[in-house]
Amino acid sequence: MSVTAQVPVEKLTVKKSIANSSVLRVLRFSVKRLLTLFVTVVIGIYLTILIANMGGFVDQIIKGQIRDTVTQRVANNPNALQMEPELRKKLIEDQIALEEKRRGLNTPIAVRNFRYLSNALQLDLGRAINLTSDSGSKQVRLILLERLPATLLLMGTSQLFLFFSSIFIALSLSRKYGSFWDKLVIALSPTSAVPPWFYGIFLILIFSAALKILPFGGMVDSPPPLNTFDYSMSVLKHLTLPCLSLILSSFFLSVYNYRTFFLIYSSEDYVDMAKAKGLPARDIERTYILRPTLPTIITNFSLLIITLWTGALFTETVFLWPGLGRTLFQAIGQYDTPIIVGSSIIFAYMLAMTVFLLDFVYALVDPRVKIGG
Image: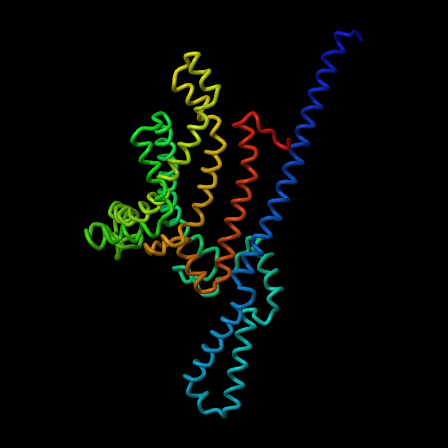
């Protein structure tokens, strides 16, 4: 075989070996990262179960509630009142033991914690202890699915508006560094230290109590309007104040953060070189400023999407918004461990998958990032 015929074969072999090594590197990275994330999820969920059960203290509270309920029920039973005191006491103890067995309280707390963990990892969310869905079901899955649309409406509207408006305004401010509006945003950024529910209380006092133009809370008027248009207008009216409180609590700090990123990259030497070459400002902005900040923007957007699931715990409670945040708040107050664990495991899985996928997204948008490198 001639030398010229051997050269393409050798090049092809080298390309195949490089491709094979890249695939193996990506596979090794993926397996290692998935295992690491799974272990993190397991540890996080188990700690959540321990905290939700308060190390077994919740069992004592539930046992006390069972004893009070059974004692009261027997005391109100005329047939039980005619029994001998010893028989009545035995009846109470037997019913208490039966109820504790039904709830699984006779099983050691460590065994139940691992059972909770195993079921949660398989997305077997079980039944709630105290909370129920509007249809009367105690299935945790149905309770969470029932509350999900309200949370997605509130969090999706507020957070998506906050995200895109912050980027647009921050980019505009980075072009006018030191202007009046730039200084105003810097001056107002500490207002984001105030939580959204605190803004919510003031908005209720102003627009609901004083001006009486917006409702105090809830998601829709009672009774709900029958036709679709009036129902939509009612939901929009109830959505205004909680949405506004969530936006106000983070708006100025969000703009300030993005504006700072844009200013950092706009002061790089390669931006000055592009300006010296006479490239249009829009091209410089798109290629040399926005593109390097894409990993940060994508990360923030991805985390924003998964936090839609959690809802706004106190804001939903202040506005009586029937979402996941208010449900979780009620579950914490009533020691409803299955609701707490169910909400946590879904968020943990979503967060783990987002972190895993972001590594590949970074490699696509930034040539400097090498998967497994």
